[in-house]
Length: 111
Length: 218
Image 1 (cartoon, helix red, strand yellow):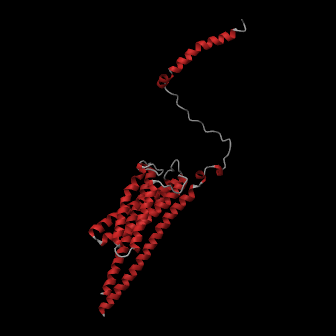
Image 2 (cartoon, each protein chain N blue to C red):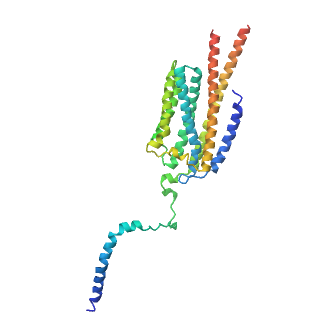
Image 3 (spheres, helix red, strand yellow):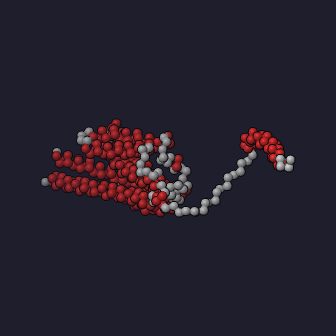
C-alpha cells in the first residue's frame, strides 16, 4: 500500500491537470490575443569568442570602399577636365582658322 | 561669349571646390557606409545626362519641323554632353554597385535603359560625324528616340523590380545628406549650362568657318 501511494498521487495529479491543460490550450488563442505580449528585450551583444579573418567573409564584405570612392571621384574630375581641354583645343583651332580666313578675305578685298 | 560667362565659370569652380567638404560632412548611410558617398556626384551627373537627352530631343524636334540651324547646333552640343554625363553615370554607378550589391553590373531596367540612352547619344554623334549629307536629319530622328527613353529611365525603378534605389530616396534624405546632394546638383546644373554654351559657341564658329569658305569660293 505504501509503495503504491506515490503512484496514486501521480495518477490523481495527471487526472486533475489533464482537462485543465486541455481547456487552457483551447482558450489560448483569444486569451493570448487580448493579453499584452511581453516586448522582446534587445539581446545584449554577444561576447566575442573567436576572431574571423577578413578572408573568410563574403567577397562583398571584404572589399574596401575607399579605393572605389576615390576612383569614382577621380574619374569624374578627369572626365570633366578632359572634356574641357578637348573643347578648348577644338575651339582654339576653329578660331584660328576663322581669323586666318577673315584676314585673307580682308586682304583680297583691299587688293 | 556673353559677359555673364566668365563670372559664372568662377562661381562654378568655387562651388566644385566646396562640394567635397559638404559631401565629407554628410552622414554615412547605415548599410552602405563610405561607398554611398559616390551618390553625391552620381545622381547629379545622371540628372544632367537625362537633361542633355531632353534638350537634344527638343532641339532636334524643332530642327526637324522648323529647319532652324541654331536648333541643330544646340542638339549637337547637347548630344555630346549626354555622352559625357552618361559616361560619368555609367562609370560611377558600377563602382558604387561593386561594394553595395557585390557586382559591377546587373541587367536591371534602370541600368539597361540608361545604357541604351547613352548608346543612342553615341549613335547620334557617330551619325553626325560619318553619316554624310542629310545625316543631321537622321541624327535628329535618333535624338527623338533618346528623349523618349528618358521618362522610361526615370520611372523604371518605381514600376519594375530592381536593386537600384528608388526615386523616393531623394525627397526623404536627412538635412545634411540633402544639402550635400542639392549643392552637388547645383554644381552640375551650372556646369551643364556653361558647357552647353561653350559647345554651342564651337558649333557657331564652325558654321561661320563654312560661310567664310563659301564666300572664298564665290
